[in-house]
Length: 407
Ligand code: C6P
Image (cartoon, rainbow, N blue to C red; front, side):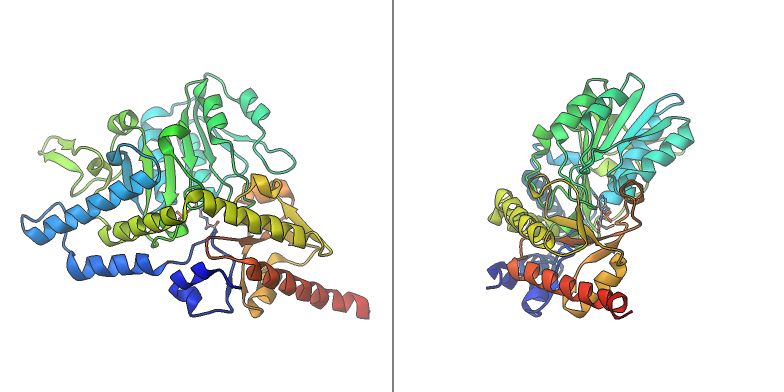
């Protein structure tokens, strides 16, 4: 039986034989999200914060309400500390640029981990290079978890930032955020968490996580592409200079100086992306209806099943910790078959997976591979997706074995 939740997702409902196993790249969108965005455009569309007329006031309210809903979903008591951005990449660049250039100096150290997506690696690396700071990469254990002993040994009074992901996109490792934050806090470092793969799959509870910044992308959590956010601590956001300048983010502009609007507007220059904020809020309400504990339990069950079934296929190696320490990601290689070839064969069998370095080249280098194949599950995945994956991999194994056996 197919997962009844597939009926909520028009693309999946229209393609019953499609096995979409690339949700870590982007999730499918439920009808409630598409309807909410259409409803906004059909009934309330205007430029918010600007017009004195009722329609613009309604648009402003929809934007405001969306922020409040998303903040509640992510456990942020003060919605003004949730800034809308285009997504995780922009959020992390915002912190590294606005906070980084004001606070990082020669001789300081910035620590990231070897698990990071390039979006939480390169902005810090480039900031360090530009400011004459030291860029340090914390190593991993043999099963791709952050080596906490190594992190404890690396931090010092010179450490100004510790940046790490909530969940690895490449191998699925769920990091112990509070424990890592405590290690960073002990030396007074800023704690930045890349939640691109956390917010869609786990109960975030920002206020209890004890991090300074948390970045996320709407499109990975049933929301539209083009919107995400950065949650920050109020005192830090207020002290930070703006990231971009323009409309909405100013208080007064004079010839000789300008002053800034209050949070969150100070960091949201220009016309905001209201429809996508409304869509993302509908996505949060949808996920809330399922319950994030059930979301994770469902993904973990499929991850465990897939890992177990893959272990019986000759030549497969699965990366990352055991399924209980991972989200819905199964990252693997199969003998010396290139992951892109695997992905092509799987596609011919209706199975969509991602193959490549997953924007985590430093991790791939440490794994000793240039790429992996990655299957990732979400709320609409089911056992038939796992069956299809296993069947298609078996076909690939036979196909690629033929030349060798016929020789
Ligand atoms: N990972 C994947 O297939 P954006 O592109 O800004 O929405 O998210 C960037 C990003 C940052 N951190 C992590 C941990 C991520 O997984 C991603 C996006 C996609 O794994 C595309 S590379």
